[in-house]
Length: 92
Image (cartoon, rainbow, N blue to C red; front, side, top):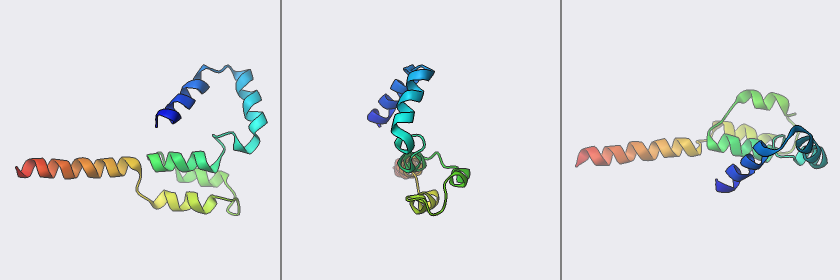
């Protein structure tokens, strides 16, 4: 998580021109367009079914994104943990 936040922090400091140059060099692996970046968003809890409208069904990784939409996220597991901890606390 620290690495992810640090990378976003770096992006926030870039002006438009250097950002465009770096993204153009990376092409489809630039991060924000990548299946892996979207998968990470989904896993962390930022799910939007509309994201799949921008990915062709035969694109590698599409099936993973489709599956991730229906799976529990990190935040879901955190809420489950809090609920379980609250139950244990109240039973005392």
